[in-house]
Image 1 (tube, rainbow, N blue to C red):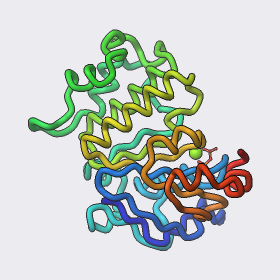
Image 2 (image 1 turned 180 degrees about the horizontal axis):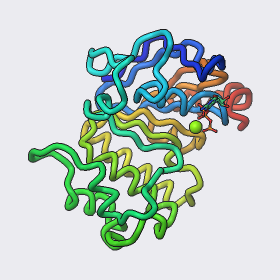
Image 3 (image 1 turned 90 degrees about the vertical axis):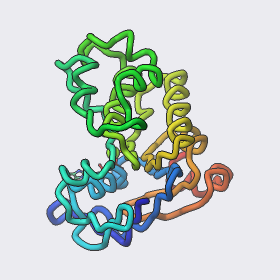
Image 4 (image 1 turned 180 degrees about the vertical axis):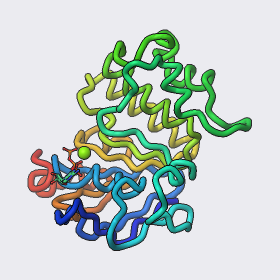
Length: 231
Ligand SMILES: Nc1ncnc2c1ncn2[C@@H]1O[C@H](COP(=O)(O)OP(=O)(O)OP(=O)(O)O)[C@@H](O)[C@H]1O
Ligand SMILES: [Mg+2]
């Protein structure tokens, strides 16, 4: 589904991603763990074309998207759930969802399907983005991405700042989407959460992948957890 081949990404002279390679297979959740400032968001920005890599290649369904403009990448059914949610504060839940709406057909996401997937959003349908709780905003951010009918979902720290019960809700949503065949690249700092939902995990430190394993192996590797995740 997604293949990242030795990408190098800069902000001006600042060399951030220093040769990252990874793959996301269809229907899998790949977790990227790493502390603050290690390059997790930069990896996502590289994929969606906000900060294309200066070297290396990004393939989506075998197609080279490395230097495609971001609007074109969004149309290729790559959905983004950005860090900090980025809900439009003055738009209602319904309007926020319509911003994402794209595509037709029987298996596409629509309002009805969204509200049965995230029932709390239905109760808030005419409320504005800034009137929602953090958990509701996160559901809305995921729902807005789903409205684009993605085949690949990129999620940047979806559990940031959420209470444990809501973290669980988001985890169940990711697992349910996976059952439906969606592929996900999940960036997280919440290790127990990432372990529960991921099929493969990579640890990112200073712009390189320093450890790749099954979630179980990462969970049991005290040395890697202490050195790179501060746990
Ligand atoms: N727009 C930018 N211009 C210059 N440097 C940036 C920019 N955005 C991020 N950086 C730098 O790039 C490095 C990686 O940042 P990035 O946002 O990818 O980290 P992160 O792993 O997502 O961190 P966090 O967990 O805090 O979100 C950091 O050193 C950061 O200061
Ligand atoms: Mg980040």
